[in-house]
Image (cartoon, rainbow, N blue to C red; front, top):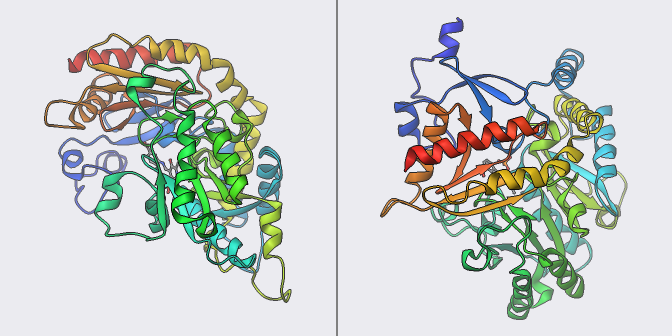
Length: 442
Ligand code: PXG
């Protein structure tokens, strides 16, 4: 049985997500076990995890307190209906998350993924304006190079061409801010680039075009993750907040990646001193151990719905697995680990050491830009002539098969986002493996 589990002999039936299926099935990268900072491959190699799985395993892999919490919850009550019934850990977890969030962000709606969190936040925004008698506010503003998951709402405000063009015209009432990345102005910046804060002023032009009375919300990632780790320029998020306030537009931070310590704080909102009206989260809330996502909303938004007859549902939205007991148990145990091991503080304390190490890759063959922020690093490699994405793909194969390192790629960029239990030795080892990968491709 073990052999069959480690090396399945028929890979055909599984249509893999966001994966080059044919290339994978020809040369599989199969992961079979994980602990703390490492994965093990089906051929028995131990790989350093440079990606926290997919930006989510912030507390490290298969941590005992989280495993135990899930096991105990599975035995006690694996499922409870989420509509019209509750389970105690859902309320506890909501309180804990609200306490971590800044300002009056104090109510939590649960779902199961980042994509659902985004669609939930966008629907709450539109429904909120309806509840306030401003039903014309339906337009949703995202940003070029933004990633907000794969639901129809998320791809409408998202700004990644291939994620949209296969799927028709998407939702009509969406517009986009310009991307904040400009290599000529920002190359090799550490943390928030000095150039680009003024790009938030484009929101005034969008408001001028559509009129504020038609705009429900603006949604941005404080650091765009999926398009190669693009931190917000200095002053950018503060400016967006001011313009949204001026026109009564809701501001949503998609913190699916930046939430739970990635930038050295519980939420990036805290790092920037900006209180959005909603925060989308997922991934790190359970350290990836059980799927979970959610939206934290300001008290005023929740209150706007709490009217009408008391037996009537206030928001016609939710999922069978909203606040799933096993996800809630995993979430509570994960927050305990973050707190007792001071992992957000660890990310903050290591930010400079990490930045020095990642920026030390400058000068290696084909490296055209490097960005760092929190415990995130992106190394842009020059694309191969006529084959965009090929060098990035080769970097992933090289690092997996030959350097015993797991990385993420975004086009021709290597993206690093290690678990927050990282130490200085891990940093040295990881950056050395990345350097070997880059040299091997030259
Ligand atoms: N919003 C943001 C900002 C995200 O990064 C989602 C929403 C969607 O989450 P779900 O749970 O529906 O996948 C994401 C997901 C990568 C990568 O390597 C990024 C994500 C997922 C997988 C890979 O860039 N982000």
